[in-house]
Amino acid sequence: MSTTALLDRPATSAPVRHLRAVNHPARVETPAAPAEPAPARALPAGTAPRGFALYVGIDEAKAAASGVSLGVLVDALRRTLADLAPTAETYATVALAPVGSGGRDVDVVRLALHEPSAIARTKQEEPEDEESAAGGVVVDISRKRVLIDGESAAFTFKEFELLQYLVLREGRTIERTELVTSLWQGASEEDAPGERTIDVHVRRLRAKLGRYEDIVRTVRGVGYRFDRHADVVIRYGHGTPSPDRF
Image 1 (cartoon, rainbow, N blue to C red):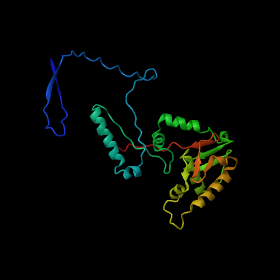
Image 2: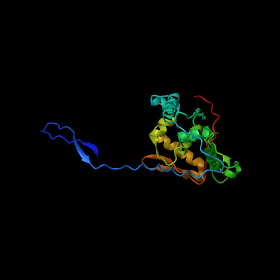
Image 3: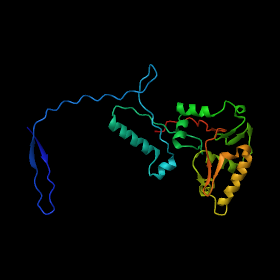
Image 4: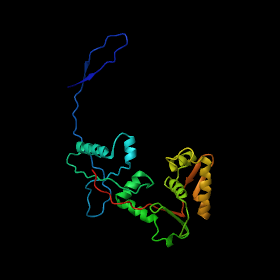
């Protein structure tokens, strides 16, 4: 016979009772069958999993805002791994990308570390040469230029920055106040443009885009948005070699 202890819940006006034993018929436990391993994903012939790569998209400024540094984050991940799998070997490197590289942080990291699928995706989005881009718009982030129907467009620095800011946040409506604070950082109140000045910049930008002006959309009462467009190719660049830092 086995004994199981049950705890009676005390009434509000009664003293707390002690545990009392309740007898149950003995049960014979059948050993559980070992869990079946999860089916492995199809792997190329002659290969076997040997580890994994974890790409963390965060720059030094964002880490500092959270009260840490990149080195602290790496050490914390290593300690966690040492607790879970003491025999695991680790290797860490810092991802270096050109200043001002836009897009999702994790995508910038993957490109900077030359992750094959990220590079393959970028190559799919890039034409083999400038002539193959005829009939569309190429926003070349790495070279800070715009090609329209194969010809270089005469964008000013601020016009390019404005287009780049929208392109790298595709699908999200950007308010005028955000454009002012982001594109005129450090400017005095006298030098910073008003929200209506942004409208002027957008009009000039659209004029230079010509028949592709609708790639920059107006969201009435809010701001502007860039949506993925069949006539637009984005060139991000592959970053620079990233050294071992940790």
